[in-house]
Image (cartoon, rainbow, N blue to C red; front, side, top):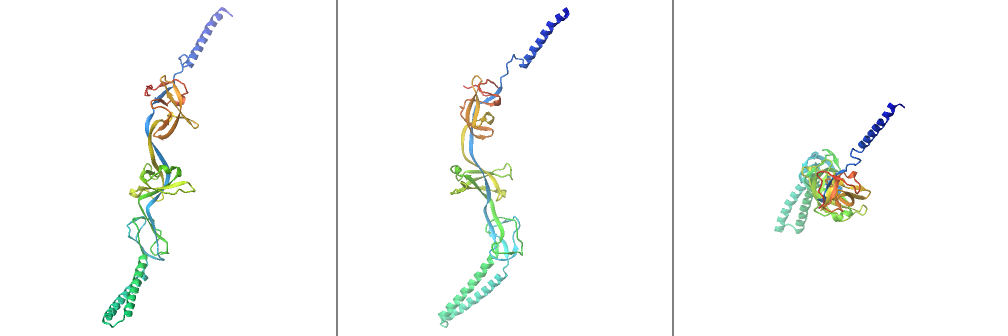
Length: 353
């Protein structure tokens, strides 16, 4: 090795060592190996009102509903309603053939008039002593029979004159004029939907939380975002032995008739409410059945504490196990460990007093 080569070797070694040290310094963030503290946000627990809700599903029923059936076997002369019509109580719905009944009534009325005139003559003769009491009684009975025949004819005519038993909407028509209906065949269904009877079931454990007068909120996928409000009207005094469920009925006003009988509705009942401390839901860490939060002390060191949680509302969760003045880490929870020192964001809660 010549002198020039031996003179350049130490300089090359020193240059390589300098580059190596510089690279190591960059790898530690240029701060001599000290890592920055994790930044978190902390808040004091807030007192919020939580409402215990009973949630279930129920079936909408008409306030009143009647299926009008034919009382006799007869031909339909004429129908007085169309699909979905609104009818008033007593309004004519259908007229069945009644020619024979009308003829029978006319005959009975004529017989009644003749019997009445004959009775008047016998009464006059009896007053003068020219008619016996037996003749008078016989004619009186004849008049009564004639009146009974007329009443029977009127009743048979009434059976063939079908009227609405209540006010409401008529179902879709499934028969036509000229059809022959038998006894019991349905002619129309009339439903009063001015309000809805909402029937729902609850497990027997909810019996103590349910009482008449409680507010009921119902919703249907048919009307997204719309709540129908009513009250609990009746609670069945008997629990179903096979399902261990209790049935209750709520009444819901139904302006515009938007709710239809047979609808499946989601039901919510506010059973009770209370005030409790709450923190944002993201503050709580779950491990199996246990729940934890990180509390921040005056030295900005976090400590993991077990808590009990309850109801949720608008992004907050009910919490027990921390004092009201504690600082609970609400953001940056995932990067923490028990005993770690942290840095606070600018909008965090101040130190404990």
